[in-house]
Length: 370
Image (cartoon, rainbow, N blue to C red; front, side, top):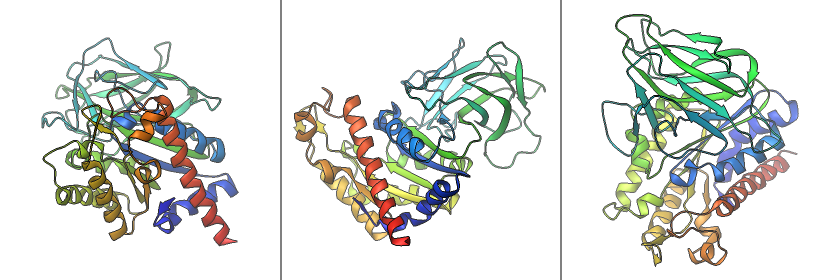
């Protein structure tokens, strides 16, 4: 059940058009914390959307392994070089954060990053187009995009005049399941490669389901990330799902009025940069404090999210309300020993619940149009 579900109509309009005409791309951006970083939950939703409405590509890929943190099992990033990195939860003005919530930087040309897709389903995620999210300034390196043999498939040259931080769109002309990004110095002033992520697309009609998840993230971290909201434009989302709140519930200093301000700031920023997108909020599933103790603040966080969504007429999916206390997850062997994170089955269960809630609302919307 999604409250204020009628607010999803603009998104459902696009989904219905895709279904009936089999043309165009519907883009969904799902923002969250460690519950999303491993992509078990969101990969479950992604695959079901794409089986039903078409596969337009893998979507956003972030070089998390290069940043020395965990990344989804459905892709692999690697580099022989050591890259500096910054996560949005750790302030550092020297390395800005963009769309991926995690940034990697290298100050030496020729230090390559390899990206390889690993599909776990019949969908396949080969791509012939990528959007390159990189810091656009006059000191940035240019890039070559290489195939598996080392041949150059495409090149990206930074312009002398920089306006905004939108991605470069690169057509590769044939389907690939991997590529290598090679920073190139073509002018003396160029001194860094600063990378935020890549959107891998295939040019086919269907759904793109982008996941951004950062361990420890809260609403305020995404709002404070310098280029995050601006770069969401580059994904052209029709639906933005925000699944945060667990870390706020474990933040002993955070008050609910402060949480409301952080939520409002992020939501307004996302709406400003994506005026055609619907923002859907979700409440976090309950979890334990210090492994076994009830976390009473989780109820406060849940209610604050519900109240904010109601006051601003935003659709909201209440996962906490569906599954109840943390004992549900423990009883059904769906939570890990830390009492906060769920196992793969637990996340896949959550993903199935979310997809079914969206489809139930979509079918109700469709029946009302008949």
